[in-house]
Amino acid sequence: MPPSFRRQLQLGRLVRTFALLGAGLLVVVIVVVAIGYALPVKHTATRERTYTASPRHVFATIATPQEFSQWRSGVKSVEVLSDAGGRHSFREVSGDGTITYVVEESIPELRLVTRIADTGLPFGGQWTYQLTPTPQGGTTLRITEDGEVYNPVFRFMSRFVFGHHRTIETYLSDLDRAVASVPTR
Image (cartoon, rainbow, N blue to C red; front, side, top):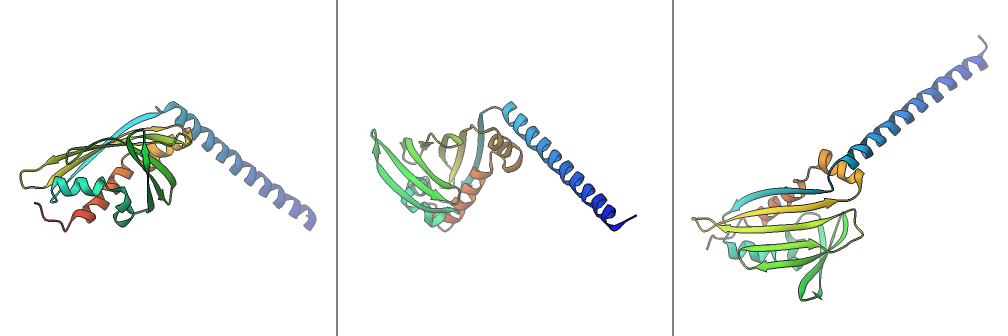
């Protein structure tokens, strides 16, 4: 067999291999998008954790956005914005980009509700923080995310790769470190 023919055979095998890999990748993308479209846009995720810090201290920590970059991993900076229709708002800059939030409800030491105000993102929704005092003077914080994921690929990733609870769990762990050394009363 002449060397040029051998090279053509090798090149043909290489082209077929890349074509099969490309076709396989295309099938995976189509399946991910199809499953993403089949998943609901809205989801609810809830997690809670108990802290030794008082409800007053936990609430002060979670309701003071200008200090988030000091204790929340991934948050680079926060800009407190002027009130939007009588409601507080802030813009958070993290490794994931910039997101503007509006405080929908704030009942000191009991409840805080924040909502994503940006409409151009592939996701949206709100977080409800419910604080319950413990008999020992600590706080149980329950966070409920009522989220929406508009992009079907992000919806697939959120459901099957990252999980809807991941951001809440990271937040609770960060808060644990932020309030760990605080006395209960």
